[in-house]
Length: 275
View (spheres, rainbow, N blue to C red):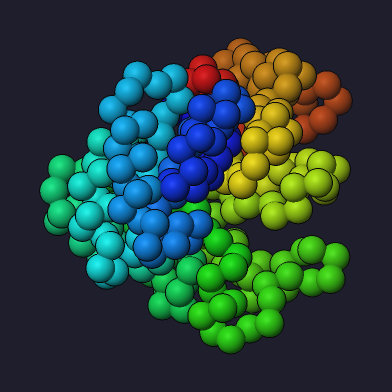
């Protein structure tokens, strides 16, 4: 499953499901948690169950409520028919195991940074990686949990504590051999800012991003897709080392390349082949 763009859709707004599917997003996240009021959750479950039962062209995840909530079991009964389950307020491998204990389960995408305790469990996901499709983080619930005013500076960049959490999630994902998914960019009208945010995410090692509006999907897909020039350069790096199997470092187009460059090139070509 490609995971460049994952588009949130409130579960109690089924009239938006088809529009979301037509957006070009790699996957939809049908939400039963924050965007759905408690009294509307049964209605949302019914709408999601109906959508999952039909033939659809875009993979769907369902964001359930936290595993220790009163809603989790009812949510899981619906979400198990999806292509994946997004697990909010996850606190490492124990939260994943608690979800797996509910029964047969599709692959899971934990939101791994929404509580203070979660930050100290980011290295544990390798224990359950075979049950996961990736790892993502959020910048809203954690400041609320600790009484912080905001996670962002005035220019929209993250303050130091949340830069750290972003980085730990990134490394936690890659340590477990999983896709690292960047969190949302909330300013829907700021296309230029979104493109810069996506570029930073890809530069830093994220593989895709969550989004809150269909208008953001095209920018995200483009930003997380390698260009033809990047693909050609990667092929040239691989070919150069294939022609010189004993070399630790080589010159290519006037620049030095070494084994880490080869590893990067091979990873890029592997992702391209999967797409």
